[in-house]
Image 1 (tube, rainbow, N blue to C red):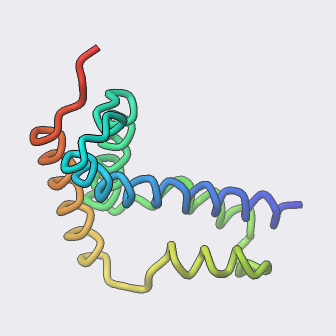
Image 2 (image 1 turned 180 degrees about the horizontal axis):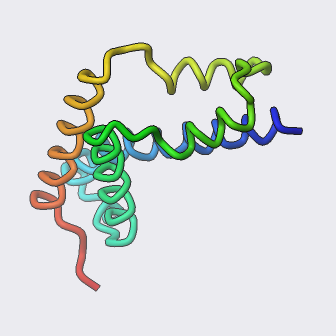
Length: 123
């Protein structure tokens, strides 16, 4: 049961990462193609807030709460199911913390730039 819960947390964590990545790519594409949904204020607030949260976690060397929850549920065991293993490989990269600091700060600056260049609609 705990493994299943850990897999669900991993899938949710992966979905959030996809949301951030797709947002950073689809917002500028939406600007070019005049997609109206990219100007949705609530969507953009959640997207920018999550990206800035991730950057702040990295600046202060704070482990993501979802990573902690998953690890606690797994009790340090590796994912057993095929899909959980694949998601784990895609989500967790074995690179130095400085890489992630630079990456997440650059992504945060990109999100802020997009907010200014392609602003959401006011209510």
